[in-house]
Amino acid sequence: MLSNSYRLDQTEQKTIEFYFNHEKLIGYDGEPIAASLLANGIKTIRTCEITGENRGIFCGIGHCYECRAEVDGVPNVRTCLTPNREGIEVFSSNPSLNKGELENES
Image 1 (tube, rainbow, N blue to C red):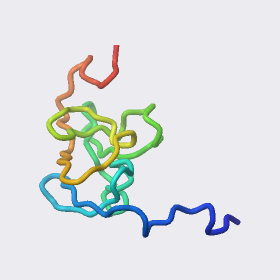
Image 2: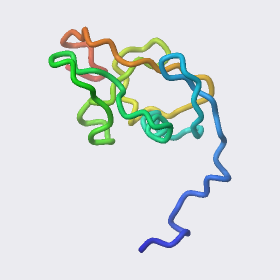
Image 3: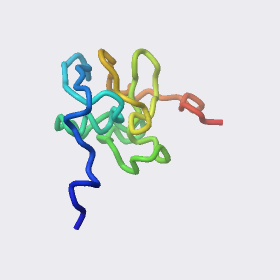
Image 4: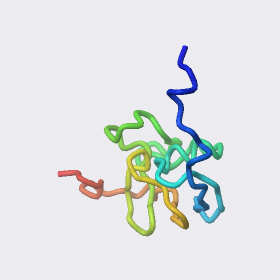
């Protein structure tokens, strides 16, 4: 069992407002956008471009690309790796993704 000394002291974290699909949400400055979305009860971040099924956080470390979203106008950003900040605008990814459009994809 972990003691409280291993937990982040949330009282020292700055609370911010950010937007997901035009809805104003609350998160912590610097935490991954995906974590802020989960904390607000949002599990679906996008739909699969092949099957149309809902997708969200899977690996949480940037390998699977399941948590991609448009962040401040940049498409296909991995929200599990991107720090949240005041006023950031996040939108569900468009399912019409073309090969080669993934961030860092060769």
